[in-house]
View 1 (cartoon, rainbow, N blue to C red):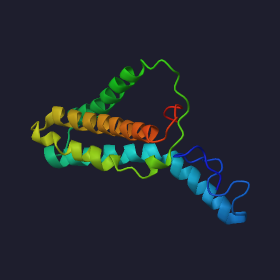
View 2 (view 1 turned 120 degrees about the vertical axis):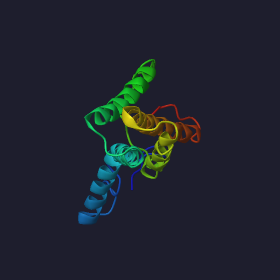
View 3 (view 1 turned 45 degrees about the vertical axis):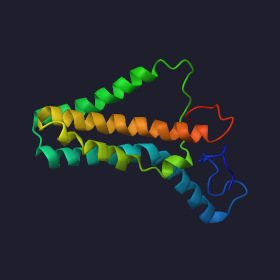
View 4 (view 1 turned 180 degrees about the vertical axis):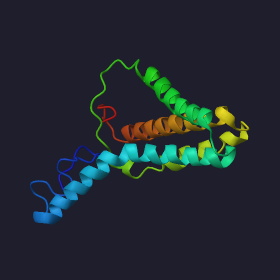
Length: 163
């Protein structure tokens, strides 16, 4: 299997490539590598948001329109806040390539565990749903960024940033 720089899956050649297994097996492995690499980040975030919503419903009861709006607003607010903080980055951000470390992450479990603590801080209502989504979004992004930074730090000389 042709490899990208250490710690990354090259989705164009993973599972075979020009010198990999011929025929259907190599083609299937390449396709599987592309799909799993492409879904790694959105899959984890989807699981995190679903779990945070389920935990909020369990803790605070079925949401009405106000609570649903607060949940959406909480997720969007956290995402925008982190985006504004990151916008100060001087260097342009390059296209994201999924690293193998992301394929094995437990970030949704950790982020959902943080959301489970929200009901200890608030009694429910719109604030509970807002905080649940905010904690899920911020937790997922911040923890995943930490995992990525750790991966950068463990490979001497890596200066190519979060690709």
